[in-house]
Amino acid sequence: MPKPTRVHYARSRRELELSFDDGQNYVLSAEFLRVHSPSAEVRGHGPGQEQLQTGKSKVTIEQLRPQGHYALQLVFDDGHDSGIYTWEYLRHLGEQQDTLWQTYLAQLAAAGASRDPDVQVVQFIP
Image (tube, one colour):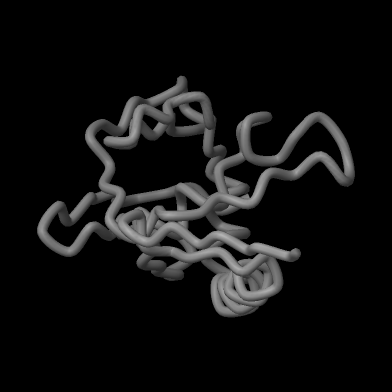
């Protein structure tokens, strides 16, 4: 498994930049990382327990906490801090970013939800 050689959070762009020792580079937005958190809060404890994350378009990362030599704990400004992002998972997110993002947008649309934290979507069915 390739190991990271550079991890940098560009605060002004809200992007995590990752470089691996095999030459692969990825740029992942804070929003993308937040909605794909590996935490039980987001993923649940099994299939079908996932929780769609809404209103995260303006989220930022406040801290990057190394977890040994295998992972990062990301602390987001919305208080979420329970996801441990292994290097393998971050690599997966980088490799599958386009597909995962399109799937997320489709899930939001199907739920009538928004990425914008200032938009409340209410469905009323009489």
